[in-house]
Image 1 (cartoon, one colour):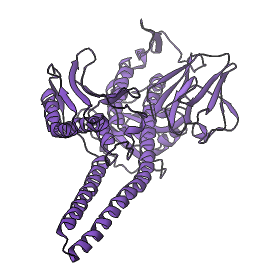
Image 2 (cartoon, rainbow, N blue to C red):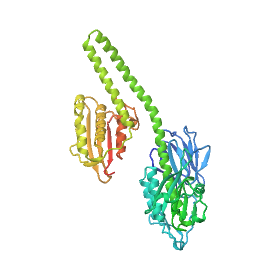
Image 3 (cartoon, rainbow, N blue to C red):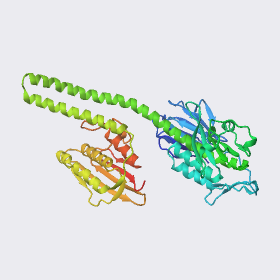
Image 4 (tube, rainbow, N blue to C red):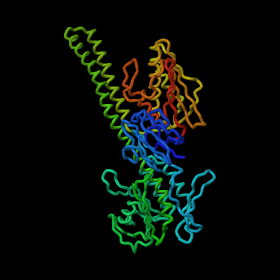
Length: 520
């Protein structure tokens, strides 16, 4: 069965099975067979239909549909490993029924491709009479572990090249990639075994250029091969080399270069297996790049909108300060001290609001990691609730913290999480009616799900647009607010590997639940 999996963008890792071969499948924003949670996706963005394969057509969407980063005009038949982009959401098309090149299986010294009990493909290699080391399914398993654990390119490539060097018994291994901006070839990762150093091996540019053209190269004796240097000083040159392309779908994004101090250390069949596994690394590398690109675009767009909103907010506060300043000048001239005192209070209050706006903006834009330590979450939440008691009493709101708190000790940044709870409780107090409001705070622990949670519930008017409340400068407060409290809270919670859930019904109150992992 064919499928589309989100590899970068909102709702990453979501997989859509392409099952309806009759009427076709609609792609749209929050509707259709394939619902994209992306504001850059049109409500009716594209359509997929089946006819001896899956065909994709753009439905005159605002931001277009792209296949392998080429804008789609008309209709195209999708092929296995094609990358599709709707708005800022990148997806990978996979078709289990598509014809793929098979690795020839030989009884001795060949590659075996089998299915295990779970139906997973296992690739193994026994070099037999060809010599060299055993290349088994461990390579695929190790690369899979590295891919799943890596969030940064350096982490991905460093771990991957280490796995290749170890499993193939190479002296040194390198991953070379082209810089997307300059087009220059660079060594992105290197790993050597034992006491060997990377400087002992000279990378042959001729081999690399041939591989970047899409062909794997195995050189059994480098002394018989005419070499051209990339600038490395040869101390003890490699005697044999295996170099394969690193692909992301159909595009070659780099090269894996392995060197051995033995003649004929690598075989063509090993190269085939390495090329296949390196393809997984290439896809993961491209996914990381696309994620970073999306984050960068979103930051730039957010920065522009933030500047507008910040200017608007400061302008309003400055107008209030200017008015109060004029009144104070007149009051001082007339020696009307009571009026001057009232104006001074207005001035001070609005100066405080500007100060809070600037501090919130700095907190929201600051890139920092939480400082984790063992913390009694129940005690932390109780402290935040107690800090809000005066605010609740002033409005006549019943504020209570559940006595059966049992979240226990968890690793978190106590100061930042305290701010999150304060913000949620303050918002709840502001959302309820005077002298009638109720706010209840609870904590809990779920060993089965591996998480702890904090719940803040109120009996206010509810939340109309749950998604919008986490956008910067969005506010529905009756009091003056910066519109950054919830975005900051969401950012802090996500830095802890958690999430904030909103349960609300119009006119029936709201419940905010912070869920944090027990272990990180």
